[in-house]
Image (tube, rainbow, N blue to C red; front, side, top):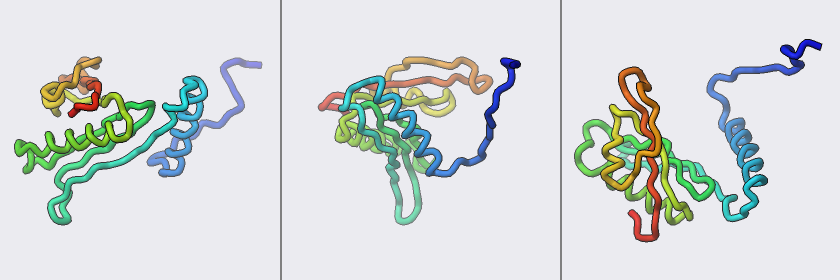
Length: 151
């Protein structure tokens, strides 16, 4: 038998459904928990925090809590609202929610043209970097350990 062939079908799905994404994350989570053996790590939650002015979305975040860590997937502030401490207030709410949910740290990434200095100003440490990604920029991985006194 040729070892370069196999009897499986590989399929690429554009915009996978929410249910498929949930199923795949759950499968990975179940496997990970079985290896970690710590029932206190079972809790997970995907959520958004929205800031609105009337019906208009002016800032938001997407967060995924797992293994007592909060993955800050994105934090966005409308361009005309930047420089007014809205991002600072949103980050404080995110950290407060992380602590409420039992997280011990917040982690995520930011490109050089976005806001890595914003995060370091609030106690986030650079824990990794992809140089020249995207070309001419860097991608920074950031982490902040939380305490009961945070943020």
